[in-house]
Image 1 (spheres, rainbow, N blue to C red):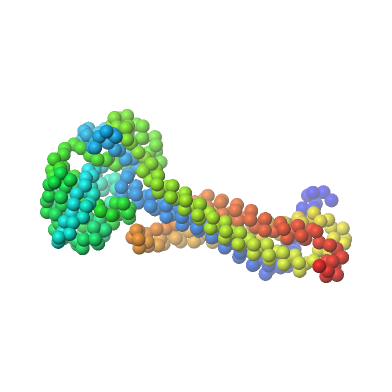
Image 2 (image 1 turned 180 degrees about the horizontal axis):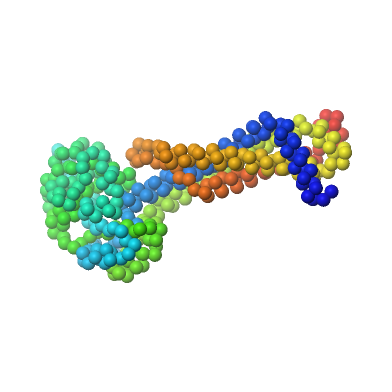
Length: 394
């Protein structure tokens, strides 16, 4: 018999065997489906957590491009001219200059070192979502000169509430009484730890600074084009320390790589566990068919054909299980995208993310392990002794 004829024969017997043993097929289908779905869901959740954290950092603290003073300077000078240049560049939709200085906040005999972030509320609304993170109270406006916003950690540590008055001392020694207009929770731990927000014009007056900034945030029409804009902005603004959002969240991305490795390890272990069960089920099924295998060999069926029959069965189990797992995994990830869960630590809603690569990765891994799970039982089936098989010997 030719190769094509052998394959047709093997396929015929394999399909006949699968149809006959529907319970075996169902058990294996469930095991592979859940293993495949588990792989997709774990990686989808991991990716979602990382992307949510990155997006939150960009929207609250970095923008798509962050411009810093040169290494030998404390501040960016000539900010007005630099902002005019940014405004004239196509592809830049918004920018916002910030002043960042140290200070101390005092209330009811308590004091705490804080990071004072001075910003232009009108520009911030275009570049960040920071004022959308206010838990209580109201956002700052450009007209405010006696109001500040504090992070929720300061509020918790010092017992300050919206409407309370606090004394804010700047790093140059100037102090002023301010009204707490709002409490903010950005979801970025480093920012939420001890940050006070104040209108930039008020900060300039208290610090005696004009036309200076600690950082300039830039928002692009497409964040993925940040690497291309970096050298252009460096040249136009004559500044050397310009960073893309990927460089700003490098630590987060490196942590994400570790999380992905951990997730992949968990996925691999779960797939191996699922397919050990598959291998056992196939092996038991083959043992129960020893007499049938012996009869087939007695009429001239070769070992290779018997091996091929059970290998095709394993491949069919793998394909069916992968399809079922892909459908289940896709449905769960889409559900988690639309129904994110609340994280009490960051006080943010976190969801999964779906990507075609999740289907491909989970499908290939699950199918491969499923086929491998069927190889050993298939080899044993091909080596079955005719006499022992027919008469029940071991």
